[in-house]
Image (spheres, rainbow, N blue to C red):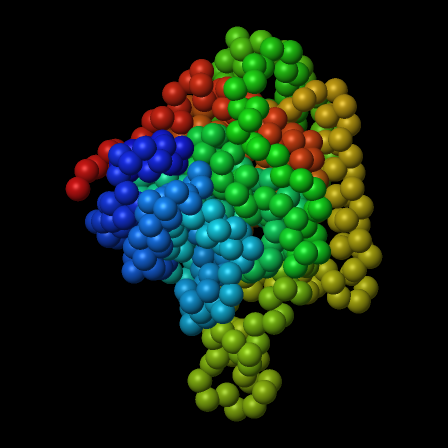
Length: 486
């Protein structure tokens, strides 16, 4: 059962090929047997999962099942989940048990899905390799010496290894798309505001967005339909109807206009990655699409703008972790100042501290206009670049990352790590949707093709990705670990 897609599992449950309990037990056994090496899970909720599976089977027997009833998945450990530890990969929240469900969790529960647990991640979603977790790094199922990407690396690795058919991630600057590319799965970042942020532990509030990670675009379409929609508890949630994202999956691509940003094919791009992406473009041409070069002239400002805006918002969001109300508290503080200082010094990791310091500096008196305000002005120019491009083409395509997955410990310099997100960060600054799909290999490690659309064009992106997956088999390739049977 572990080698089936979410869509295939949903069909198997509907036809009675297996029960949700049988499926859940099989996947929990795989997690228990295989995840010790991968470290993709922080918390496994076996008892709760089996109880939910039993309820799903009872609902199906009563004729009350929906399309996703009884389907297992996992949640990045940044989604508040009632009664379950929600750590955001940090020592600061290692003892925090959420008292309520995030909206995404609520919606998935209402759809009848079965959560198997919470997946590992870079601390507070700050990282591109999943090496910043308090709970240790995650290994890439394709190559145990490689990173799985970040910050949603645990979710990506769990799906790639066949531990779960799908998982939820969040994307602030590429944290769904880059690990999806590194692990050879499909990952979708929706339009900002398409999915509620309520109950997601905040990193950068104007950039964070939840989305699905699965084996295929079809799976992502089904999951997006379950989690999207307006939420009055999230002031950034958009009041807009939710279409059936599976309805247009099979639409032909004849006449599709593809734009290739010239800025995405320059210095720093691994030749094998470029070759895989260009071969994917040729597949689209064979399906009836036309291709033209376009320009996103402010792309080179994306990383400096992001690393002003995101740390600034992070410094504000993380100010609440003071050792007083919840989270880690130092032992025997001498006074209130000592409590604040030592609790935060002990609770946060190095990368989180670095970004808090950067953000506090850019928001300080005398620097706000020079840095934060200027970065927001650049952000507007970056957004306009995309809008201008979409006046000429239907979608943009390029690599999801400049290289395949790099070795664990290879990028110790923070700046070199930040450059790993060079092709993904601008999308978050602009608020548009993007999807990464498997498109080949470089040195035995997966390569991801990134497809971008204008605001609320998720249905079109999923259609374009699905048609590519109908014409290729990259998304069907599995690492040897995923082929193991118990």
